[in-house]
Image (cartoon, rainbow, N blue to C red; front, side, top):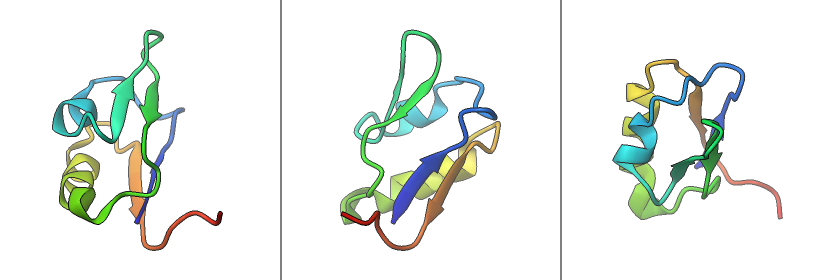
Length: 68
């Protein structure tokens, strides 16, 4: 699964970072860093939860992985 963020839509609420600091980090400027775009199998459930709970709907998760 591949995790993406639309930086133009995100509001920096921090919900995603709270749910999974292994996947997300809010930067000093309020922007979101996706720490693992290719989501490990053990974090798929929490990544799906973060996508569902993002108040700005800035996160998306798609099947497959990034090309090497």
